[in-house]
Length: 190
Image 1: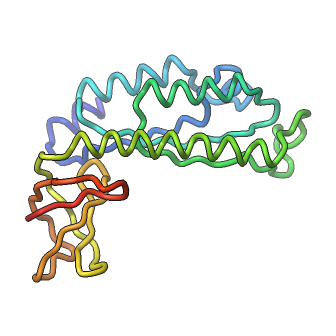
Image 2 (image 1 turned 90 degrees about the vertical axis):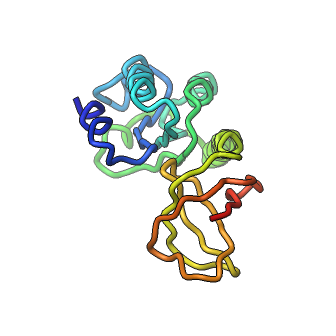
Image 3 (image 1 turned 180 degrees about the horizontal axis):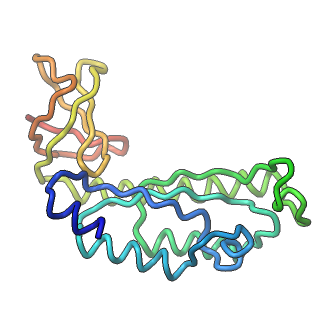
């Protein structure tokens, strides 16, 4: 229903942030999440049926107590399969008086750090691929601030854009031709 209302309203951005936490069925069950991997995949598939060109963001926790390398790779492969573009990766941190804090097999800090880095690298690669796919298209960009002689803003996909302009673009929406992704942001022209 929500997707239908958004689509019909025409008032939406083409970016959805859908927290995932883990791509491992066993880890999600241990976390006592009220969804499983298949439900998550079905949700992303449904969103893309309504919004085929959307970008997807996700929160991911790595290093949950007992997470094996294989379970970590289930998360990696799911993020890769779904084409997730915006990663918010967090190492598990112990919180007092929680079930997880009392569990055995806490993951070493170095392993968690390496897993975070691995997912961030995947996220950067997928965001770059998505950003490059926008080259040559036009998007409405909401400009937020001036930086280094250019104005910075975001597309409806939440992709950073910079445009050189003599006039103040701050807090305004302009149509921008997306010319080139330079590895950090899309360079554009009004």
